[in-house]
Image (cartoon, rainbow, N blue to C red; front, side, top):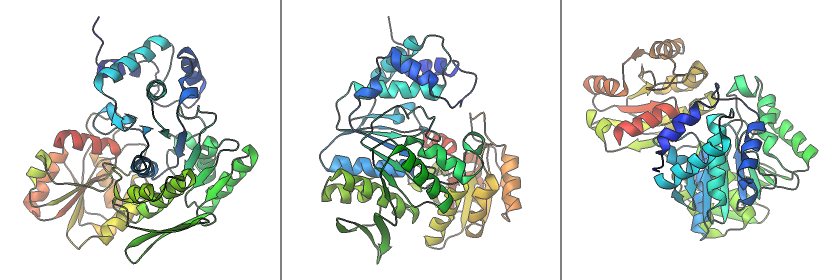
Length: 424
């Protein structure tokens, strides 16, 4: 019998639960038991939670591990262009036959029992990781931490908490403290946790949870420090100082992400080659990614075209700082967001850096914010704004009006994924 393709199986999985997000671990534990508990057979797990910087930090840790001559599985979400991006086996994206087989096995094991799409696909990733050789496993939390489907490894090698900010309030709570409590749910007894810079309210919660569960913390500003000095990245901890190049990932916020990754790699004692590779070889699409070729680029050939998937107020502030650091050039946004986001909070830090915004709806996204609503939010924070039916239409209009402008497509990873598929 021919194996169904992965997209067919994934579509079937979407129908197993009426909600996209329903935070609990009961369904995950049930399916993992039916699969003989693959989460107990993973190579050294590094579990990463936080609001911003999880993906960049994971990419830097992965680059460091590989430069040290080791291999690592990596799990991340959401994907941009193809689901396969979520599962990296010992450094290589899972191929279609392997993905179809592992998804089908999980679908059969689950039967018709209710389980969310993220839960069952996370189980599939864990099963794939358990069956492939590697030295480490990098697990990025999907949402929160305490009740996230990745939080089933009882004894990880290391945990990491990147900066926490307000996001996903409808699931995690409406205060920084409540959100931090959910993120800190990945802490485990006797397992060290690398903690990136945090607001005081979040740090107090993390420290309280760590004390209660018995998890030692390695905290920015106490146990390790990172800063930019004279065009270099300077990292220091109790074992000494490292003078390194600036991160190849763009933006001042990547200094913090690099420091967090370096603290993890230093704990693992992977050596100088790992530390340099972490800041020079990390690959993480849709984080201030410059688009130089492709059909969309050809629509505005003299424009400088960028893509970024940040989508909350903290990401907007980081993006505003990046734009302020670039060479002066008229800058326009093409923006599409989900209806669960603080749109004005995201756009407000960008207002002073741009000459206008074209709002679009995200194609094939049920939770897209209508373009008109994004336009209204942009005008509310002082931007000139209009709408377009698509990113392509927006680019054509911008190129006609201001053919040498800088154009940043932004607001959502789902929009970024659509752009990468269209521009591929």
